[in-house]
Every structure is written in structure tokens, then in C-alpha cells.
Amino acid sequence: MKRESTSDSAILEATITDLAHGGFGIARVKGQVCFVPYALPGDHISIRLTRKMRGYTWGTIETILHPSPARLLATPCPVFGNCGGCSWLHFAYPDQAKWKQHIVAECFRRIAGIQIEPAWAEDESLRLGYRTRAEFHCDGRNWGFYERQTHRVVPVTACPLCHPVVNQAVSKLTRISALDSVEVTANPDTGEVLVWSNQPSSDLETVFPNSDHPGSNKPRASFSYDERIIVNGAFSQSSLLLNRVLVQVVQNQIGSPNSLLDLYCGNGNLSITYASSIPVVGLDHNEEAVRAAASRGTGDYRVAPEERFRDALQERTWDVVLLDPPRKGAKTLMPALASCKTGAIVYVSCDPATLARDAQILLAKGWEISHVAVVDMFPHTHHIETVARFVK
Image (tube, rainbow, N blue to C red; front, side, top):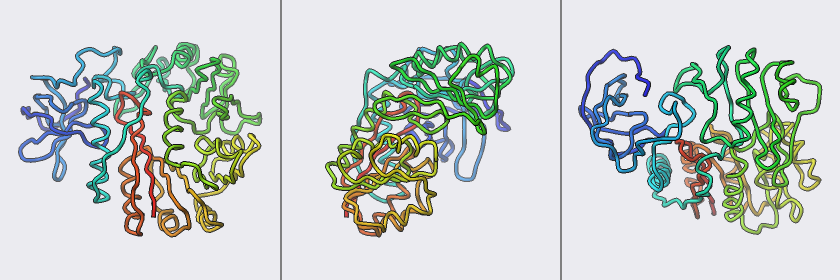
């Protein structure tokens, strides 16, 4: 594993007792919390201290003296530990699942001040080969992922987390060297590939006909998957396959409403199923994604900045308000959401800390949590998708 630079050469023994939000192992060293990348609960290790902060320290694994029972001693990737693409490829199931639930519960306890017991949802058959969207970087010669916490490229010819269609695209990228990075999105059923870059490239367009960049005058390339339009350069879940699990969990929490407001709707991923039978309004700032949702011909999908979401919340009484904000959460929207007339709020989040922060605002206004589920959208990484239902 890559060793960080340090001004403190102290090496100390410790046992990892917990995992922090972000996936780092936690140990007590000299009376302080020490965060250790790639360390797992139950590991007894020697730690090289690398950084001292106020109240806590950072360290790296020097030697694994006694491995955790959950530690896999072999992984299906030769660059694991240097590549920043994943951090838990050495973490066995079901322990990985239990600790993701624990991290969510700890965020709610520490930030929102409540105790919860999150449910778990996954597809066990898709713990590898599940990623249908990934960003790859080039250093002028090699394509791959960034090394953890750097912009150095670790060459990758095939990633065990990526779907075979994505890995095939990576092998074709070796013909192109004049780009910094590209995003590859694949249809796992048909093999269609969309490639998005921040700059034009005739070489890229030759190798990947369905490539786009900002400022292009041609219509964005797209494909249909599970009745959803996936648009090049617009957000879609990192796994279209595991998205099915997420959609099912969200639908279970939405139930059978008579009306639905979908905020941060994107391409209608989580609401398009309802749009043919009940009034659905979807709002998002991404014009391409909203256009894709509207092209289905059902539902009222509109382009709107976040500031306009408050107007929609007051527009009528909604049976359910659904929101799937970016990682930063929806803190500025919470006061309006807390006071709107709705029967339930279903909040989908890729960051349990910002979810817990926003939940605290709702709880203070008389809402309560009726259900929380952790959806394993990112196996073998520390990333966590959470779905919470609030009722008044």
C-alpha cells in the first residue's frame, strides 16, 4: 500500500475498533483517535503516524500483525491499495454490509441525535462487475484511476468492479492520449457505450461514435435502459443494474400515492414509473436530464434551479415528496420542506452525514423517521446509499 509522507516516524501498535464515515479504520493511539486507510475492525497492526491534527491523528498500515477475520488476504486486483477506485475490496461480506449499516446508524446518532436500525438491501450476485458508469484519467500515456488522494494515474486495464462492457471500452482508450479524462457509460444489455469528455477530440469520436463534449452542437447521445433515457454527460447511477434495487426500495417507501413531487429528479429515474397513473411533477437544474424525462410523454418534468423548488412545495398538497439531492444534501431546502403540506417525505442520499444533518432539521419541526434502508449501490467501496422515509 502507498505510504504517505510524514514528519513523524513513530510506529505504534494498535487494534482497529471501528470504522469512520469515509471508510477509514479507527484506533486509539496515545489517547487520540487515529484514522487509518485500508484498516478493518479487528485488525491488530503497527501504524506509522503521518499527520497530527487537533484532537486526532492519521496513520498508515506498517505491518498487519493479526488480520481481522473480515480481511480477505487476496483480492482480484493487482493495483488495489494504490488505485483510488475502491477501498474495501479486501473487506469480506457480510461484515462489509453490517459496517455500512453501522456507519449510517452512527451518523444519525452523532449528528441527528436519534437511534435507528437501518434495513439492508442488495443484490448478492452483483458485488463485482456491477459498475456501468466510471470516470477514467490519462497522464499522457496511461489510462486508469487516480491514486488515492492524488492526481497520479494508476494504469488500469480492467477493473473488477466494472462491467465487462466498460472494461472493453478502457482497452479502446489506449488508442487516445490527448485527453485528461473521460466518463464511460455502458448499456450492460446491448453493449452501447457513451463517452463524455470535457474537450473535443476527433480521435475520441473515431473510436467512440457516441462521444460528446460541452459546446457540441449535435444532440447528446443516449440509450434507453429499463424504460429510462440515459443521456451522455447527465447523471445516472454508477450501476444501472443495481439501480433496480434502489428503485424497488424507493417504491416500497413511496407506497401508492395519489400525487408525487420529485425534486432533483434527473431523468425521472425514481418517479417515471408513477407518471403514467398519477400526477407527477419533477424538477431539476440539468436541462438534458429533464428533457430525457419529459420525452417519455408522461409526468410534468421541468427545468428549475433549487431556489424554485420551494414554489413547487407550496403549489399544492402532495401525497409524497421525493428528493435525491447531490452529495452536499439539501440543507437550504429543509425549512420549506419541513413546513410543506405532504403526507410523507422520501429522501435518497449518497452521503449519510448530510442526510443526518438534514434529518435533524425535519425532526426539530415535528417529523419522525418511519423507515431507513441502506442500499448497497457501491460494493467494495466505502460509499453508501441511504433511503429514509419521514412522516409527520
